[in-house]
Image 1 (cartoon, rainbow, N blue to C red):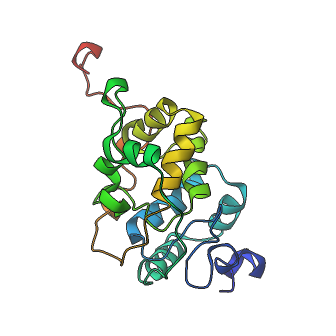
Image 2: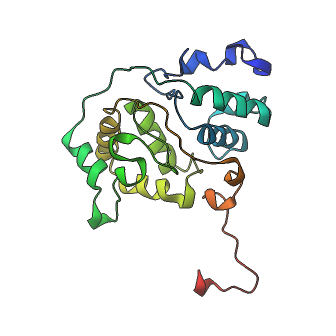
Length: 212
């Protein structure tokens, strides 16, 4: 509410709402998201794996303890009701089925039926189409580099402009779900370099490329 060391103008609620509901546009819903996932995103704004000048400036004023407290605060909030957007057949097909002929997996295979998320991937339910589309573009343009094994970068580059818009609108048609017990980005794994496409994979001594 106060912005802490970042100042009152940087208070979280000014963009993300009093109940963590987001602004329906570029600022995402935070309420009910997994605490480990939220903490990881704060870390990645600070280290540059997610590009966002305002968030980087704010987060770099928060120590690890403060990041944990902010993450736990939002994770505990029951997501508020929020107007959802109308789905569309093209987006629904991509979300539910993908396009095997292009090697495009379904969104549901990672983010769950209805956008509920799973133990490794955040929920999309309750996010705005503008936010989802913005993140897909960020991965496509390498402005976001914190997806495990680079899967989101690969997927985003397989989507046409029209498909990106359609699947984002469909994801925004899912209402938010109550917080669930997920183990997304646990503390012990947040620093694992295998979680970052921006970091080269390490090979064991004496290994060869043929075995990779």
